[in-house]
Length: 465
Image (cartoon, rainbow, N blue to C red; front, side, top):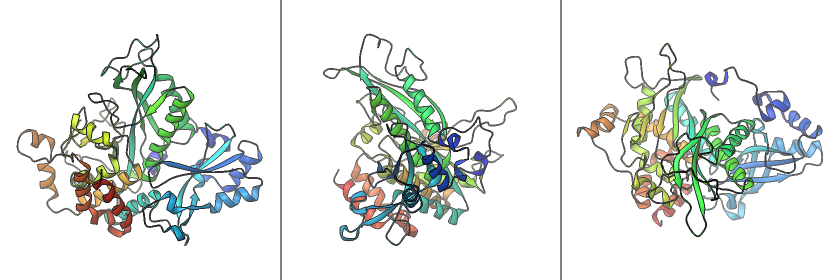
């Protein structure tokens, strides 16, 4: 987390920080060994993200302190060709190494055996970061952004999801498009959502709030399942922590739903004509540990904001390859229930691809929450590591764009509505997405951020959907 956000007064840390009595950035391997000695953990799990964007894990049952130290310090080998197929890793030389991050640890809330989880990146046989690893890609994108603009980028995800359960006699209150911010008994998923918030804090995640959403699908034969929509909004974090937070949030929700005899879905669209699951990202530039304003004192956009908006306008269609990966993604966009279908940006405008949200103010007119730039295209099929890496590279493209002010003026939602601007449609097919990726390929491959083999495989997949 950046310095400005990390220094705030808190009500006490949760989860493993409370158990160890130390902030996570101060943890050492010996702290983890002591956790096992005291019986607070018995198993060890290395969790990481594969080439398909899903969480993976490798489980251990350490029998002594020495074996525990070896795994925590050095990690463990794995088959890279299975984890990252068609990414250029040969099956004849496919060993990679999972590299744990000590500060990422948490106790698995769903394990019958007390288990410590450590999130991991990936290294190749030479010990260097593995180019195909999603963790490597997002970190290299951040390094490139910092080197070219002197700016960092923070992000948070809005995780929307549907809970499904069989209808019973108590389910008499739900109604489509009327569930926003509803309370029990008008929503059945409130207890699960609150439990999720509690567990996410214990995992060490930065969480903002949760609420019920507008989506509701009445039970239909033959399964008799009603679906109810909710959202958990996370807090601003560095890109590598923000993308893991999204996947861990979805993991917690799916496990809780399973425990409670429910289903959890983050599909972009559950049924035509009904609200789908977006996964919007709020982005905030920062310099030297301080968030930069989106607007200057006179009201004009700050340079970092101009770069980010201009870059997203130009690369938004290509970023659908990482943010809109399911067949239902296109249905969600074409039916346009608060989903953007034209590439524009605007203040408060929920139909725009890029939105500048309002800020809450205190009694003196001072903002009480950070100014952000909301990218509204991604949905529940998102690969957050690649999407956020692409957003960082988009910001560089915006900074290097000649005629940036003219581009911003022409793509303003207000100008477009007044007939004075221009707006292209978002892609309506995956072949159009593939064409957009091919057009932006040089920006993605610059300085080796996205491996060429990964983009080749992506383009091939998109062209055949």
